[in-house]
Length: 388
Image: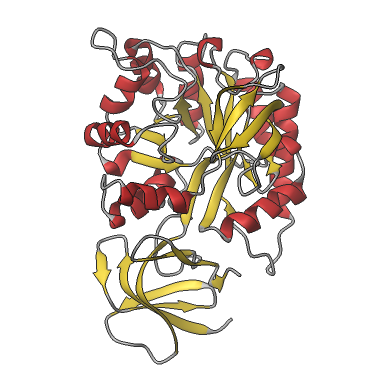
């Protein structure tokens, strides 16, 4: 591959956002930022802000492909379409299904990752996120209650073997039997435990965090809310030291005022922008299946579909992470720099994949998401190749 440099108005680098200048890319890897033009091809993105490639740590699929399909080709097809929309790394996220089905989903994701060659231009698989099946029926949401079980380290280890060691994050309800033991065991394995779909009281959540849990699943959604006599899961997400709080940034799952309340309490540097996008993301409105349940997509959102044809509760989003970054800036909750970091550096740290993704550092894969000044998507690069 050739050496070239990107010229832009701003670059979101680890230590600071640099004004103007050039970022060199050589053989698909990041080189140095410099104020002066290097002696190579210059690709001009004047009027734009350059950030690390976006990292979506909670997403079930895209473009009519989902982890529940258990097809490696579908995972890779979704990866290509995600890259075209600004996401350069994702954690394919499973649903609450049978133990055997989750195992097969893990195996399919691993196969997708293993079968890519140098010609593949799509979002990297940063790891696997298990959303379920260790949840409470009280906040099951769009998960299938038939398959709810208690946390099991033995089951996790079987899934991890099927995944070829790719599972980096696993969710559970903090009040489930064996939750603390599960959190401690996964922390020892350097796997993140995330608390969600949970009716736990504040003290139960603190016990799980003290045992090793370090993240919260789509904060506010599917969890015991904030109350002045029981802060619940939301209160724990806001107040626990060093933990990370996911937030679906579509403005529908959580209204902007509530997003601001979380960030004011938690800090933008521990709040993770996610999509929780379903497999029908990027597709036309209509009826689809999600996690084994029928859903209908309309008005930019997915809803559970009742047997009588009416729509039920929200099932998930069809958001892209680039749209979420723009929303955060448009709502004037954070700056453009902070929004980009929340969807890159903060996201990667929350899933413990920051050694590979989320930062512009010399020698790393040149994954970039470039925004116009109005925060619409300008371009995406994966491994130094501009995505068509």
